[in-house]
Image (tube, rainbow, N blue to C red; front, side):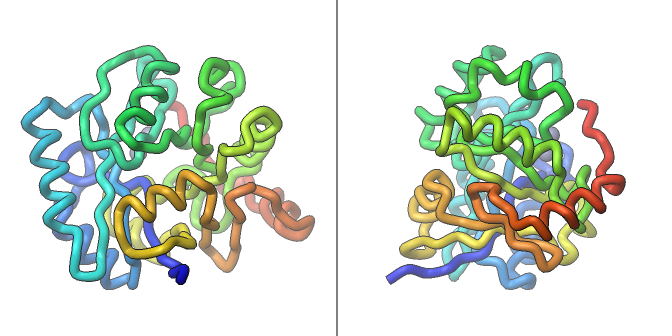
Length: 241
Ligand SMILES: [Zn+2]
Ligand SMILES: [Zn+2]
């Protein structure tokens, strides 16, 4: 039997530059009736001990009808490009883009290009065929009303050669105020377990939801959706690293 689970992606805590503890964040998302959260603190601030503590805390806060998926956000090109590694439980230390994505996969994670900057197409050449997704809707930069047209366009270009790349949405939370009516993913998965959720995310068995809009993981939108996104683009602000 399949279950539909709701979860929030791309969340920062006090482990990096977020304002809230993981305990507080779990409380907030439980109250919003979410089933899971995928956290993504900045990789650069972690040493072995800190990483171990982070992963143990994610484990201990899971259970009782809620799952916390550990993860990291990696900066490349001097910070000009961010890659989310959802589900990784260890540090991956490389400044090589391709090795990073391979490392995320070897660690059992999924690799998603965060808030794609303009010019992403040229920058991500070596990983186009390997990425699991593009964050087409980052509410911190794209606003809460619609995904970013340019990021959807980038996803389409990548899917021409890599059909496992999915449309992801994330809230890039640093402050709990960003948890108000969040963009979330609705995952079609077997059970409320970390591996089951990760498998469904990797397989594109989910949709991104927010502001009365549903974006399938394929990123294929109706004409009306395309039109409404085009109208709302002026509300997007660029992410500049
Ligand atoms: Zn970022
Ligand atoms: Zn972030």
